[in-house]
Amino acid sequence: MIIAIASDHAGVQLKAEIKEFLISQGVDCRDLGPEGSSSVDYPDYGLKVAEMVSRGDVERGVLICGTGIGMSIVANKLPGVRAALCSEPVSARMSRLHNNANILVMGGRMIGAVMAQEIVKTWLATPFEGGRHEIRLGKITVIENKYSNEIKKS
Image 1: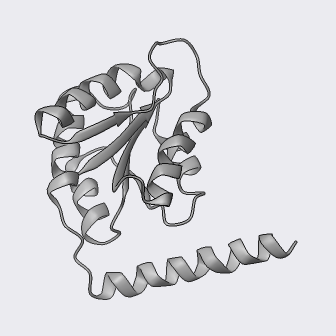
Image 2 (image 1 turned 60 degrees about the vertical axis):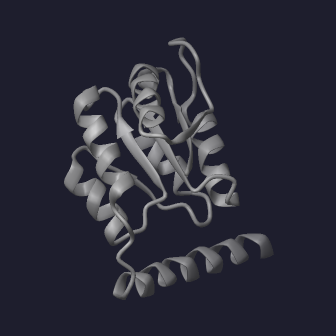
């Protein structure tokens, strides 16, 4: 599995720790930045990961900003992206089981490295349940397509 990972300045430290953890788990990790702790704009980095997931260049992504809220908003603007903000393993598990989340978002100022590793481990290990949830995701795709097409007509 190939995972794209990025953060803003508030998530750089946690991103480095999660990247190291992913690599230790045998995951091919593409770090899309940033490198240092100088202030950056989270939409720039959230978009990079979300585009790769949306295009199918990578199977999944991980995004980290201060709270995780901004990255969630940015990532979920792209078609086919299902970004889930998770702060503990239960929400990570449910995001995969019921929503087939393909981007995990965490708040670098909200959780520590040990909790983040547990969240990532759970998120990676949990499969999509399918069934009735597939029908619901299909409805989300219809909504994406409808509004995408309406915007193109404008």
